[in-house]
Image 1 (cartoon, rainbow, N blue to C red):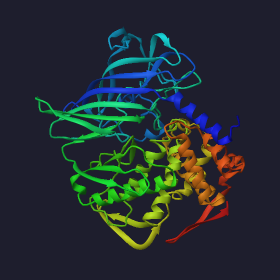
Image 2 (cartoon, one colour):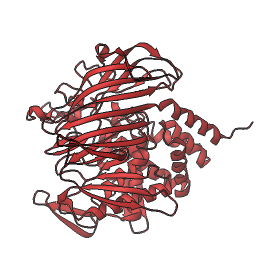
Image 3 (cartoon, rainbow, N blue to C red):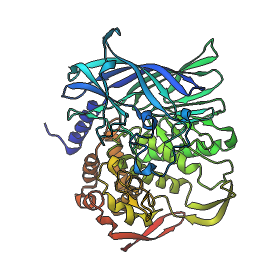
Length: 554
């Protein structure tokens, strides 16, 4: 029997996907808006899909990053200038485990594992960091075996920080529950501390009941299956979603709800639900237009959005929870006065809706290879924005940012080439192949001012290597190979690795296969070194039909 290269790669992708699936969550939780505490219970059903036995379980406890000032997150170099002395007691956070019990197949308790909980620091050895929890099992979980554990937990919600938390009676809850790491085929847990990157987890099913005040609106990952009022003035919202790797939600008494549908001659229809803050009433059409643009062009160019529903959240003023992606849900962001043509909220909406594809469906490990999502999506966003909304107009804000002025006929550089002046001072710190959680200067390669205090100069190496450099790299490759060939590379990558967890070499292999070329020379210069920055962008010329980037020798 003959196997083509394409078939072999497809089989490898299928096996890789199977090896990383298998974490299902059932949760029942209640939010107390006064104490800012979410309390509840979760039952996790986990299957060991690898060929190795697992002697323990490892969990992320992300909210412990804001437990106190000693956490690794708050001691990272990017946080060094932040003043946490002004935080009040109720503005800090934690994930507290009250009990952790191993269950039988029938659901009865077999072993209490609470006393076996240990906090570990696999990345930096900081003994005060409690963002990773290890639980030794009474016997290893053998390959193919499924276990169930019940976890009772309390989550203290922080004042909005790192795009999660509360602002008055607005709550946005992301990475808020004890969450299993990923047990990989090499026989160990991939469960990094929460220091500076985004996230990585198994695909699975989320079946979640959320209890909040009765008159509050809820938005969450998945579809609401039920809504039950309770006798104590609360209501329980039941959400359900299969084949996702995260669950986020929001609640507030202030949301205005709007619903529209994305329809397309070929692509699957999508029900779009928008939860809008009252001070942004009148901008709902702009949110819907931008979301439709992302669903259309990402779908036509790369692959279809599969879920049939999508929730868009307009975050509260100064909540710092905007511009972030979660499974079947994302946060946008806009302003009270916002002129048409300003590309705001259009830009952030297209970008976060686009993350549903490169983050939500093709779900790489963002602790280690953030560029496989952020770089892909920054490139894709710029392409959609040019296709639908044209060049980026110049907008200046006055009177402390409240009054915007749009300068007709004047344009700013695109998001992919902005900040190029910082490349030479920051990108030399790290090549792209460096694991993302180790990027400096946040990883420790900071500089010092004359006064001896730590300072960060310009965008961090993380931002440049995860977002800007890979987007420029993709535009370069598109111009070298041609749009149609590069589009086929991306659509093949999307189809082959959807609902899986690709690594950089998986993309490189597909690029070689589809282009019919050995592109190792390109990756050697752009990904494995900084040699590509012997060149610089000299100028950018935009029109309605094209964007020309002129390169000169540095």
